[in-house]
Length: 314
Image (cartoon, rainbow, N blue to C red):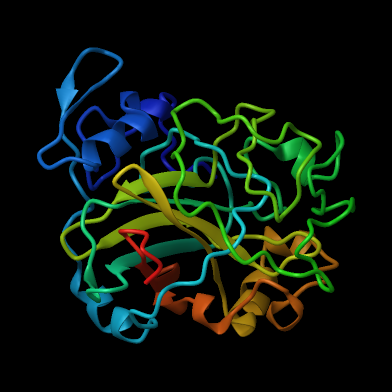
């Protein structure tokens, strides 16, 4: 089933209208515009547009965020081997991927002020029900000289698998993606602990996207419950950009009872042999656990990100 896929996917405008003419702006232009008050950016078609953040916070999120961790600085983790600037500024990131619908809401807060951080750019990316990452299907399937490998069919799982030492930091600071995939590890190199951006090896971009936080510091995405691959528990990657800097790279996890329930149904049930769970994943931390509730035909998961927006270590 295709989720209202626009064939001109790069020009897709989300129902919340993150930005006018959004598809032709891309992440680099969005970061530039969000880094200045009242900023505008010129699109590839010559149109001048201004960034519009996620719509105002809905009432069903207010109570959930109160139970979704505090303003304690969010732990940084590895970005993993499959990050690159996908240039997809959108709220619905499913494309043609099948799976249980998951609505993800993230509130970004300043760790010092313990208040909402507006106009931050939040990216998320994760694997599909079979454990594959777009832009890196060959590597994440264990084929073609896998970059960390472990997905259905075997291969060597990424470092960060049980027994390894979890990386302690992501790319905090430094230059954000430039719109074109950044340099760094070529396919076949790197690992779960690598901080280098991937050069994608296919033209798929499913389950990747970015949004701008509203005045409440909140972004929302529609995706599917992530699948799994060998050596890692179920997770979603996230990166926060503030004033053109990467200020947080982290991951979001799920309660194992819910993972078990979701994975019992198609299409997840066809992927068997899961070997890593929250209790033996070396990156998992309780603070990364999303608050999840049922939401119509799927689920809603929320989490607070508390970031060091001025990068002074507090």
